[in-house]
Image (cartoon, rainbow, N blue to C red; front, side, top):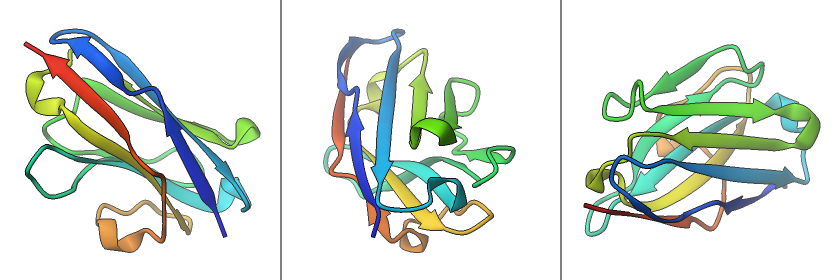
Length: 124
């Protein structure tokens, strides 16, 4: 059983940056694909970014490509989402997710383990 704990959310002005962190425990971290999802206010949860277990393959939603970067540190059982050039439409609750497997996955239904969420608010 994997437990995930996010941190790093908060209030930021449009154009600013935030770094979200997710710390995992309870599993062999290096064998898990990881991802970030978000749920904007009044909308459904949506995919943001994912990274394969080896850290070499990543995939981003078109809306964040070039502005967000996902990274992992297997030695620290942690992964991150660096968010730059934030826009009001990036606001929402951000969730980290993990799934045992080599590849990466874009669908929320592919992930069995989820963090509790951290809120990002972007002021215009």
